[in-house]
Image 1 (cartoon, rainbow, N blue to C red):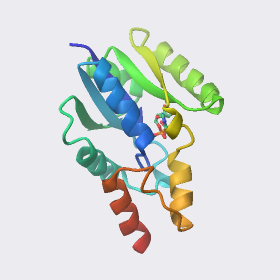
Image 2: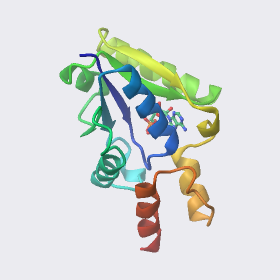
Image 3: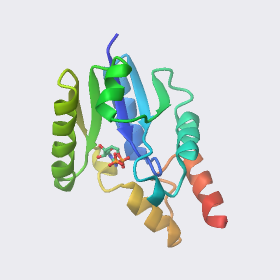
Length: 159
Ligand code: ADP
């Protein structure tokens, strides 16, 4: 069975993330969608909230399992018996960060491949940061994030 992990902070998850996870699930037998706690302090949603939302979004896809990020991503991939770490690439601006990320992972876990999937054109401008910015300024993000994310954002901004 070919397994991969798709790690990220997903704060919040966008349709760009959903698209990458779904396409990865059509290539691999199983995808662990790893919600990482890095930089928690700057996150809009807590780790538990992000995990809960991800579980709701992927509840109908039996190939995608949502798990909590624990320690080094590369080491977690090994523990989960994954062959690959999936990452998404939007613009050239992602490239430098992703190259570094992939090199660190290769250094820590040379047996794990880093697999990049290009963002679909319609989602290549979508980032969690832009979604939060647009929403907080009253813009419509309903075409950019899944319904559970939209509901959670409405709740969060009401408070
Ligand atoms: P990070 O891991 O840096 O916290 P994110 O949680 O935002 O980043 O995203 C996780 C992964 O998904 C990264 O590889 C990122 O480049 C990719 N990604 C983010 N937004 C999109 C998008 N709209 N389309 C495709 N891939 C994306």
